[in-house]
Length: 154
Image (cartoon, rainbow, N blue to C red; front, side, top):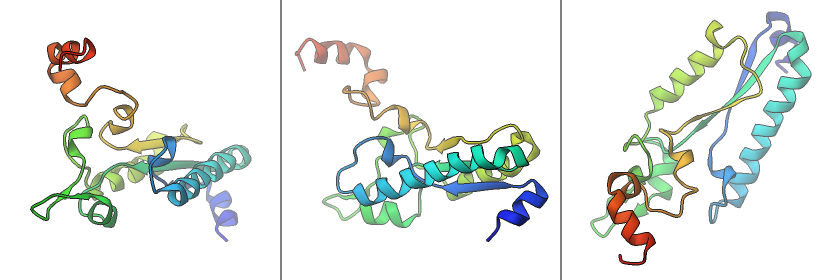
């Protein structure tokens, strides 16, 4: 429905995805499949519509404060509060909705005119911490403790 207008204006598509489809996330097969589809559609649009000057990119938000996902999927602590996983984020905090909006402003701006077919993870770096078998952030804050753990002394 929008393609003719986007072609005429040499515009841009931004799709919202996630980062959980890049790894096996328990109980999230339905979401992972849907978000992987979003990523794929965006890449195809980038290739098919690029010659017409149309760009297509994805924003993949990580853990973001004050969202339904955090309130529904965060682990409940004994005091009733929600464990949000901030310790897994290298920046040691949850993202903010405005930061997702800033990513969209960037991708729609002239500064991103040569960016297409990409997935921009706006996740504070957490995409890069989930693949390590070492506990994060202790693995970087206490290297001696990690050495002991590796030797089986912890």
